[in-house]
Image (cartoon, rainbow, N blue to C red):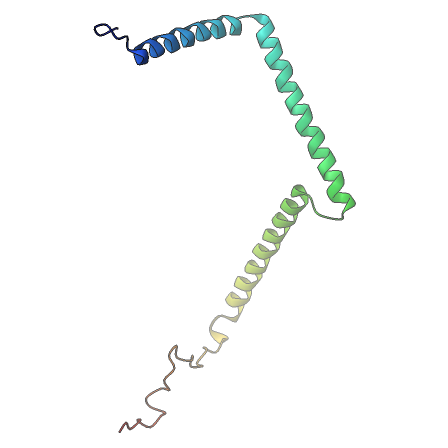
Length: 128
């Protein structure tokens, strides 16, 4: 590590950091193998799930008190709306099938997308 008389403090620091990481990793691996660690992690997970459930219930009550829909309400409404739109589309297709050839084609002319009048209807503009 040292080059000549002056020690390289970067190499010393890297070596110290590597040893510290190795010791921490071995300690962590040994701790994770114990039954106590798995029980602690299980309790932490259960506590987290209980906190999420409590938050969801409290927030739902808060939204109900303010007369606002919950996520479940909006999802249910969206599903109903999609069902209604699907039914409307089915009815429209049935009506089109019933009309069949009896329907008059739409012969209306659509407006042009420019600001100039159609050439056949307007007189040519003279520029001086």
